[in-house]
Each structure stands twice: as structure tokens, then as C-alpha cells.
Image (tube, rainbow, N blue to C red; front, side):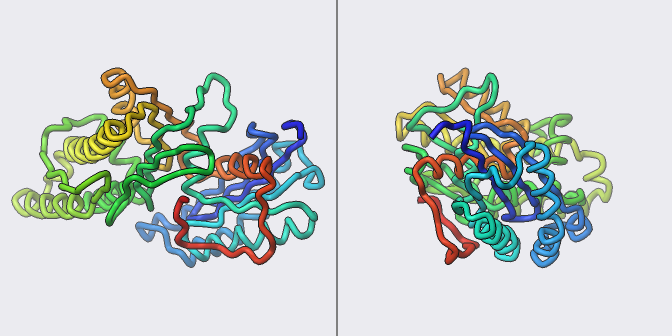
Amino acid sequence: MDNKTIYILAIESSCDDTSAAVLCGNRTLSNIVATQKIHEEYGGVVPELASRAHQQNIVPVVHQALAKANIDKKQLSAIAFTRGPGLMGSLLVGTSFAKSLSLGLGIPLIEVNHMQAHILSHFIEEENYKKPSFPFLAMTISGGHTQIVLVKDYFDMEILGESLDDAVGEAYDKSAKILGLPYPGGPLVDKYAQLGNPRAFPFPKPKVDGLNFSFSGLKTSILYFIQRETKNNPNFIAENLNDICASIQYTIINILMDKIKKAAKQTGITQIAIGGGVSANSGIRQALKKAEEKWGWNTYIPKFEYCTDNAAMIGIVGYLKYKEMDFVDQSITAKARYVIQ
């Protein structure tokens, strides 16, 4: 089938962002995201509030996506949606909507693994963006996941290592909370880190075998460090915020880079791609570019638009599955835990 005739409507609702996108083949025509500000006052995502907000947002977001793409819903070839992993209440909103629309329009339904979509977002057609070739290593870094994945083909992936406790995004956000920064704190740690000395305060790196990660110990050491220093000087955080953030970021980036270097050495693969919300972090992007020069890697860093949760990445998986006629029926259900296979 001619790519130009394939129109995929994609829906993403795994956490606190409601997103809809329309793709024509592997090109994005629209990618609309509605963020939920209500969680800021609670210092983190409240699942019940997230699912209610998805219910309010999903119809207008889908309407905007179709309007911006200048596509009538009758022209759609299929509906792709995030099946998991994520918050069950949030996933149910997107899943139910996708199933209903698919049934109403009489077009195929395509389920998508959210983490697989982060990896395959690299295959969205973009001007001046070079796509990775198989096999490559993908490091998926987000609020809920930290993984190193061997990508042999679009739908042939193997997890080589993952976090045994907190994900890297949690480490950023929890560190920010300890420092009294508002939610989401990860981007603020990155912002202040750029102004500080990364070697001002050394934090211990966890010793974890193989290619797995652990961030809970780092979070605890940061907590004890701040408690100790503020006891001696109540203004310690305010007086040293940039240096503290720079030191935290330096430690986290070293943990990530040590593991991906180890994975590259073990597999002999020098094509490295990143994905997930934390891949928007400026320090991680810079570290990957430096490694590219030092180790002779080919690195692939997605556009900011495709780093955080968005429906375009769901759409590219939908398009690839559509070409293989990989559809599901109305009995499909959401999965809060959904491992890449």
C-alpha cells in the first residue's frame, strides 16, 4: 500500500499527558499534547486526578489533532493507542476511547507498548535526521523506567539492563523535592546544574552488577547530605543550589554513561540511541555527544517534541504494525505493567 494513503490516529494517555497525533505514513501531520498542571500542587502525579483530566482532555485533543492535520476521521486507516505500561486509570481512558472510535469507524485497532514507542520514535520521518540502523543500543530514561535495550529489529528487542529500584527520572524529581524545588523538578535540576560546579560535592555511585541500575541509594545519600549541611547552615541550599544540582547531575550522568559504555563494549555495537523524558536533559545530551567523539559512536538523540510522552511516537509504531497487519480486537485490555518483548 502507498504510504501516502495510510493515516494513523494515535492516542497516548499512560501518565499525566493526554496526547493525540495524526501520521501520514511515517510523517507527523499533528502532535497535540495537553499537560496537567493540577499535579504541581501535590508534588507528583495523583493517579485519580490524572485519569479524570484525561477524560476531560481526550475529545478536544483528538479534535485538535485531526483539525491540524486537516484530516477527516473518515480518512483514517487505523487507531493506535498506548496499552501500557503506565497508570491503569490513565491507560483505561485512552484504551476505551480508541476501542470505541475504532468500532464506530469500522477501522483496525493497534495496541502499542509505550517504552517500545520511545525507542521507535527515532524512525519518525524528520528533515535532516538520520535514523539508526539495526542492531543498535537504546537507553530509555524516563520517570518510570531506566533500561538499556538491544534493538535487533522494529519488533525484536531484548532488555540488557534496567533499574532495580527507582528510575532515573524519579532520582531527579526526588532530589529536586529534597531541595525544595517545585514539581516537576528534574528540568529545574538540569537548569541550575548548568550554572554550577559539577565536582563541588561528590556523591557515591552505586555498585550494581552487569548492566542494571540503582538510584535509591543515591537519593538517600543526597537526602542525608542535605540534612547534615542544613543543620549546620540553614541557608546551605540557597547559597549552594547551582553547585548541588550540578553535582547531582554529574553523578547521575556518570552512572548512565558507565553502563552504556559497558553495554557497547560487551555487544560491540557502537550505534547508541536515547529516548524517554529524561533524554531532554541537556547534560545527558552533551555527555552522549562527547562520547560519540571519544569512542567513535554514532549517537541518535530525538527531537525534544519526541522525548516526553507524546502520541507521535505511538503513531510510528502504529504505522509499522499497520504495514504488517498486526491488529487487535475489542477484547484488548490495558496493562499497567507491560514488558518490552
